[in-house]
Length: 117
View 1 (cartoon, one colour):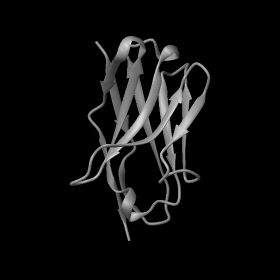
View 2 (cartoon, one colour):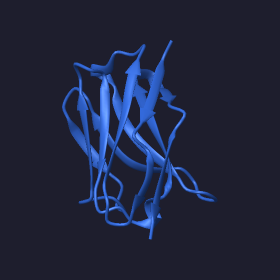
View 3 (tube, one colour):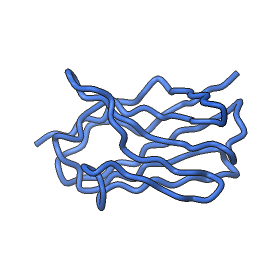
């Protein structure tokens, strides 16, 4: 059974930092493309960042480039999102995603990040 469990969300002031974690189980982590997506109220879910765990190749959404960093610890089957210089517009539910070969996608339940101005 695949499980993605996010943690690390919370309330932070603008300009502050948070680190999200996503612990994965039930998948072969080393062949996954792990990602973070977010959804703000009334908006569509959008890409935040992805990492190909086998190569450490990363991709970022335009709105977070230079502020957020995605990383993974393959020994712990965990992916992280370091978020710096947070802005009120970063407020959203952040979801962990695992994309596996043959189009299989799995999602966590999400963790809420609230950035106050």
